[in-house]
Image (cartoon, rainbow, N blue to C red; front, top):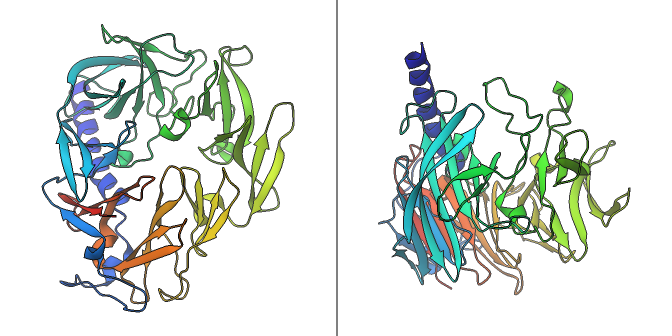
Length: 428
């Protein structure tokens, strides 16, 4: 029975990972309806040849994603092999890894093993690894886990922070959600739970609930005191409330012993520290949602109202919030608004992918033009310069990243299968 169960999990992992490629490459309906063109389809009034800005790199055949190290990127394949790169003008220069080590993480009743490949730069360390039931068939309940190892949080006395995302559809996504959190000894590489597991329940897959504690890479940059903030849905157990979230604070006491509710009923896995305040989204009972400001006490102050639904009508990247159908970009740090000019693209143009630089000055977005062909826009919000590029290939974007100098890397799949990739790198 156990062998049969492991075989089912292995097959399920392969199917989910294949589905992940389709999800993250963003294969649009417009690409299903349009024939593959051998040349770019351009509108001279609104579009440029993408080679004016981008160079093509084909020797890196996997999606290129950001690490938490400045200017460093990585690739990882389904065997857990990791490579590190830095952008060098229009090319990617491979960096030798500093080392690798084996880890085991206790998740529920099982230990998930992985090999961590890491890089040290400017006194900081970042690494990643992969568990799958294909690589480690002795594990029964889990089928997948992406491991990230990074610098410790303020609350930690020593050791690295190690996090695991157990959702295979996010394998190539830059927006991972980590539900397993550990402190990793720097010398012995032994892992212990960073936050207490008291009162954590199991889900229908016989795993500990993945919404008990949730971290993202964005919120890791915003931990600046002795208590760590993270997301949790542990207080919402009924079906109708299953999508609701709180921001939790580590330490203290209460219903969940080790953690306390810091902000109740937030609308997304985002918060921003600005001065001495926390900014977050909250849905309004009568429709729409609001950006809220919390400075302590029992109440939060409303900063700005937004129309529509957060998940359906908006895209968030870092501190930038894009309204898909109008091109309006709101910077939650500065309160400034910039509107990307959609005119000349198509009536009812709507963005479906969005990436912003850390400060929000450079953005890249994608939608479909008047001929239902994928269109990619790069925007320098400081100068108002906008370029658009139209080609079916932009319908197969797997990952986008932008730095504060406008350096951009687009990872594109070679067709719908996502079996191989190539990179377009902006040359500023």
